[in-house]
Image (cartoon, rainbow over all chains, first blue to last red; front, top):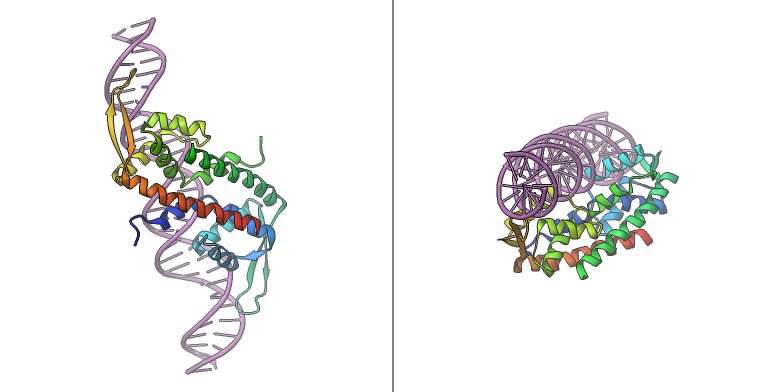
Length: 111
Length: 111
DNA sequence: ATTTATACCTTGTATCACAAAGTACTAAAA
DNA sequence: TTTTAGTACTTTGTGATACAAGGTATAAAT
């Protein structure tokens, strides 16, 4: 066991980039919530349902995403989300914003 | 004026890295709150007093920082903060945590 | 004595993410 | 055919972080 709660440190650092992650993933393929969670978990960007669902709803209300229902081969129907043009425009802005933050941090850390 | 509130996007992305910034800066030189704010403002990592003061108190209570009072050449005395060994240890962990987040984001964005 | 500048501190609010519990649909097992 | 297991979506309550705005206090200049 670590002296510091490294998990919590990372959790804090991840804050605010989740929206960026969601738009990034959906920019490549449409997906439904459970598959997004799996994908993020694989990338060590762990998210739980209670976080993701409200976030998707927010982005849908902002017209960054749309969704459609699709039958599942097994189980209840799935809500597939797709990125919109507006979402793609925001994604590009987020690229710049993220690069800025990364560069600023590098400056502060090394100067 | 932009369609999106880019400032707010960055503000969200900055969340959770402020502690990292403070420890980084204090690792180089002791400083007092107002000078930290100036330094962060220069780096475009804008912080306001109401954010910084509670944060410094938290870090002091966690024994990541100590402080001492020093007379000012002009104005009221200043509370100079200095990083502790424990703070330096955490800073190293934060380096790793931050690199992880940056790499993960790069993966998600490019894959 | 009042104003100006500097510096520290507190309170209330908004947002983000998590934890935990709940709803609902489908298919397979009892 | 009822029950159970699995999948998927949703909501409520809580904690943490940062901001906005206002407050306190010291010291020098007018």
